[in-house]
Image (tube, rainbow, N blue to C red; front, side, top):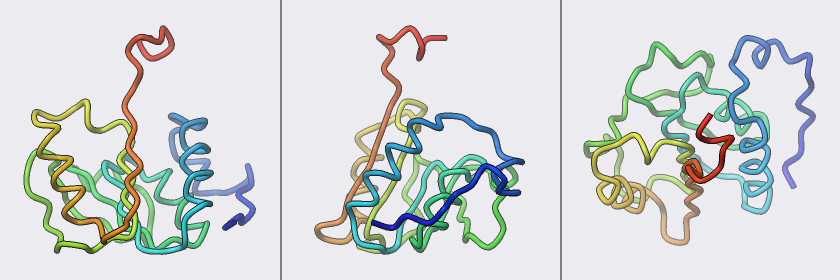
Length: 139
């Protein structure tokens, strides 16, 4: 396990939104079962999950369409449009985390092909989308 203490008094976490904390905990639990390695967080938003993965020891790269939203210093960021080819070489990442992003794009098949392309053989893809049948997701 890659458990480092992530306390409530963490200055960076205090300035970030707290969207999907339970989902982030689930993602971190899944990552605990994987070896440390290079991880792409896309779409990264403000960077909360990127930061939490970095604190656990992963080599994190964040990607999103708007760099101005990303707030985490010392984590590499690249502009990535999920509807286009990623500016990333084949087999570059051990893991890719794509949380709540696939439902916002025009072509989900293209996104899945790009995610598969940039993953190393035997790499791990962690992908989520809201459950629209849940009243909590609808609200």
